[in-house]
Length: 401
Image (tube, rainbow, N blue to C red):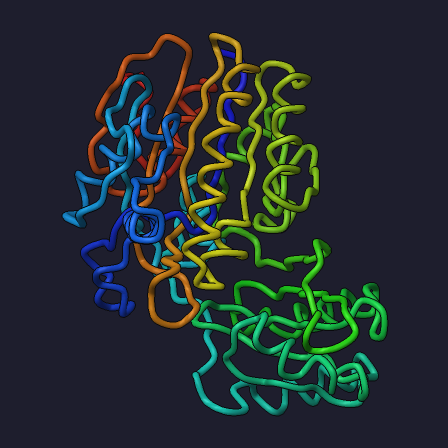
């Protein structure tokens, strides 16, 4: 037993689940549709030799009849499978908590898709507590669209831009220069305190820069204020036993900083993978290195950009060789996702999909893990790997590796 590494390709689904109709997502398939768009645009199949070699295409085709192709599809090494979600939602906390053994079996609080979607009493109290002159937006919106439409007014008036989506979330966009980053965080902290009773899963600070609508751009200083997981997670069990949990990217925020030993922030896919590789090189045994690769979801899924998504997958595939080169023969790598975010789908929200499970150890042969019934199988497998007591949910597949 050495270390385990989880790489979460945020929003990388591989086909709609049987319950997708309830979410309006029947037919969504993030991976297949990205591959189709790439081939339509370039006239040749997408090339992901490392991911395909670990069984990504094989895993996808066991749960989806969508027709697509890659340049090299055959699995060569590693275990591959898929997992459906038992949590009631298709958001980031639900996906991550479930994969660590704590599925969300209750309903989040949500906001209706109507003008002025936030309760007036809440908004009035929030502006009073934070001494702000008011707010803008107060509706469902795409994050990039709303800063383009309201960013200049925000800079003139000092009113933060508040918006939501189909997720259980309250998001606040503000200019780093004119409004101030610390002031934005304080505003979001006040909102988080007011929204506990409403059971809103996350409050997210969305800072941006630029001088006008033509050049507004989000920065890497996003901060998530999440509720805590409803039950103990794999992370809690490990840290209670003095084992190391290294969180990279937004993992620490997702778990409300619970069950984390060390947290490393990084912005962009190259920096996130660089940070992961550095931790693999230096962390001791009995360590979980847990990385969220947010850019698939944030930059390409929500932005409905299949071209950018394909380019990011290609880069990720190339960097996987750097990741595996740092692993010892005892280490275990799991590549997975937390939900879908099909860049060809209607709207700009997440999609209810199966996630891939790709597990790699040096010397492992190609093994089909089948379609798993819960993301929690990942957490249970890692509990087994670290010789911990069984988690409350999930079925281990460690004996297959």
